[in-house]
Length: 131
Image (tube, rainbow, N blue to C red; front, side, top):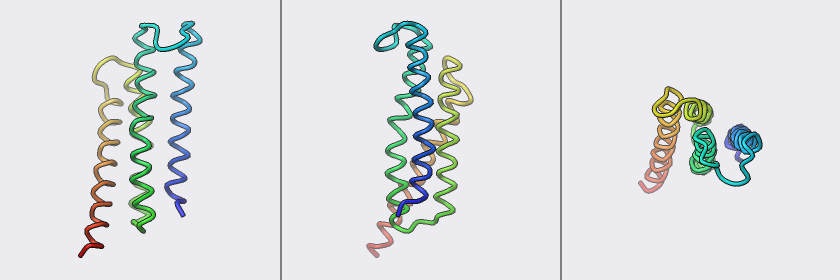
């Protein structure tokens, strides 16, 4: 069973829905039917949404594989919490300010760190089975 991954998948889905709502709200307020209408804020909102949609599935696959292979549940929770924090920080910094921001930098860094650690843990599990 994927109880832990299912929990974080649900939280991360709420983040994606929040980002989707931000895009819809922008489009309605600016009367933009499709795309960003050349509006800089719209571009950043859409990219923040798409960034989440690009990274979250890969992280969830890695989490699910680690959980299915009897990975440490406390470590998995720690990585899940870090991922949720990173995925909240990123759009807050990305949309609020053009260029480098605290949220954008640390949100990306946390996400990449979680991905790297999960990839390493899964490779370690594989190698442990090979020996």
